[in-house]
Image (cartoon, rainbow, N blue to C red; front, side, top):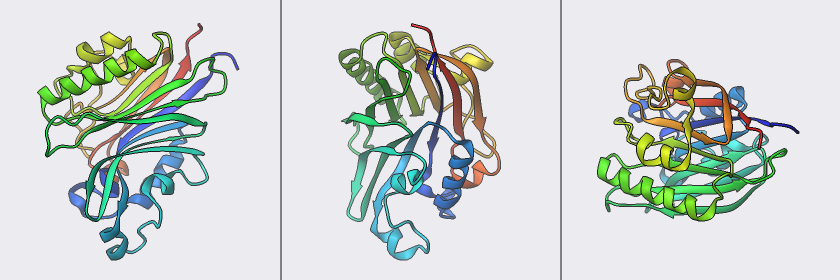
Length: 256
């Protein structure tokens, strides 16, 4: 396959609940992800287990949310638990139509009350000569901590991935100041998907809150791909599913 194409989606799913935790929306979330039909999905705030919800909420899935969402569509899953409590845990997840290998969840917690991790995996995509490195991120609410986390991510990828390896970093950056352009994207040779299509790479789309987005929190950064189309999925039905908008990007591998 010459210059293979990929569709990717990133979404902070708010542990499967609507804004302000009013309704459990995991089933609606699964339906909407299937309608988009991406090859790779980057998810944040994924509930790996919650025994209280399983006991008290009707129709709560028997399996972990990432397995429930992936069932019969995405053959491979990776999950990294970031926040652990007595009745369960949640973190980041990656779903893929292709084999996942070398899963690594890096703890980048800076503040004890705010647990954070970076979920990395290598994915074997047909038509790609090298493994596709994918990282799902959910960064700190505090600028100083975000800077440390982006530096840790850059150093990790510089160590384990060749400079010409295809790379996608996606997730909830909580980066309304857009420091990631200087601290991460330029350092690793990345382009932000929505900014690269509709504006400058330094102008990612507004993704929060989902009903009427104001803040530029969520991103898809790519290396080694041409961005064919990118879209912010806000308003109904997305705003009823989570407090964040979902982002999608259609990509074509550059000739190498």
